Length: 449
Image (cartoon, rainbow, N blue to C red; front, side):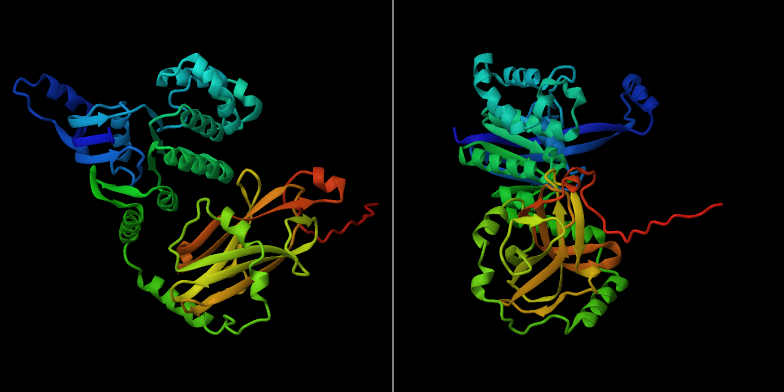
């Protein structure tokens, strides 16, 4: 059978009471008077998902997404309508759901395998892969009540990914993981999709939905408002979010106009002596890294991002205290009035340690760029980070309202560059903290007699 899930006229109604006593009044009223109002968490929802499809589910909080998923997984029963599910379901609806907090990670792996229908012998063959993917070290042998939310996410996803489900449902559970873990999960889900697993992915991260899913549902007020390609659905959903914020105020419109006026002429549109060949270096690696969780509307995109020493040599190792150049190569796909740039430096767990953007540098920006134009943006800074591995995430965006930090992303690459800091000073490599802040230090002896 080609159909994985088929829903016909699914409806879930809750009775809402203004006061607790109204519940008793309604129960015992001799003429069955209603003291409640009906709330339709789902309202006449019908759809069909075929085997191997990857479906995104988007909508504001309260749209009915979680209710629908809980009905699909059997956690809730519908008030009316029918649901047909063909295949074994694995789901990540809530972190730790289905885990016994008193049991260890290993024990919970076996228990979840048994719940989905696998024997202990089958789970014995999978246990090493699950533990390796979760990558939580010795905590795998500790009670899960001691786990952080990130550890819950790692273990829960690993268990559900390796028990070979026919249908995998993921509901925002990955948002707590670090960038590397999220990228690994996305990669695993793509391989599962290629292997024929049906995936339903719920996320407020529209970039992830568009990158992972081919088809999507847009939900509103308990109904499926739109069933189309993920790209089309995401665009409609973004417009809904913009409309819900309202149109630009006079102050916001004035900010846009003033910023554009102030920046005109700052962008250097003259050709430079940077060779096309030099801009291609490391491009293959960049494009490979950039595939993970990349997002933006595509009006302007990073064609390459390089980390260079001051002689222009491509590097992936930096000696503590040395200056480097972060070079961004940006191509415009459409005309853009003005564009801001920025970057994050993150540690191995995905924590932002450093952030800067062009607003911090005399509000420099690219102004009145035309489709087809290419710009090179160089950032030069001294690396004073502890000896460790780091990622640089890069972003380009058009500001909407500076006072609200509202922007429209053109391109965002979470892992554009990766580099290792090397410290010749053993003390610096072992000392606390990630960023070694520069100080002008003064030491004086004061005679208090």
